[in-house]
Picture 1 (tube, helix red, strand yellow):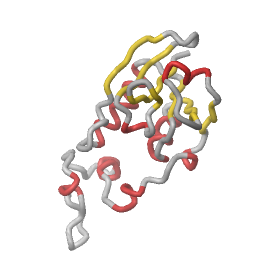
Picture 2 (picture 1 turned 180 degrees about the vertical axis):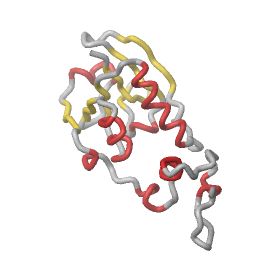
Picture 3 (picture 1 turned 90 degrees about the vertical axis):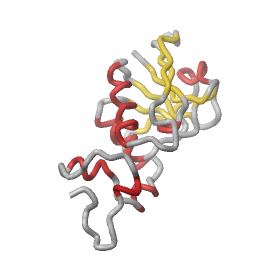
Length: 151
């Protein structure tokens, strides 16, 4: 079994998609690899966040350990067949796989995305085949007329 721990240096990160890196461990807690999170910076695009899921799948991750996670990211992980467990307090990365964990098995157990609800979100546009693929948030907001920015 492969575990991925979202982390900031030596601790499980406060938020999954903002973690500095992900560390991958085997079932016996042996470190396999570390990789930098492409979505860790403030200018992260939707494709950067999607790259997290892709990388987790590439590493054949079966379990992700988080401290906090948004409901949308949680839904994507669960849909990809990846189990998600939450630590309840600050936890060292090396101890994460053996600490008390709560399994998250429904997107509603994640934190609500206030930004998603406030702004037009490009993933919805891509699903409707109307997104131009630009990552500029200002570009993706609807104009005063309410028309879609990219169509």
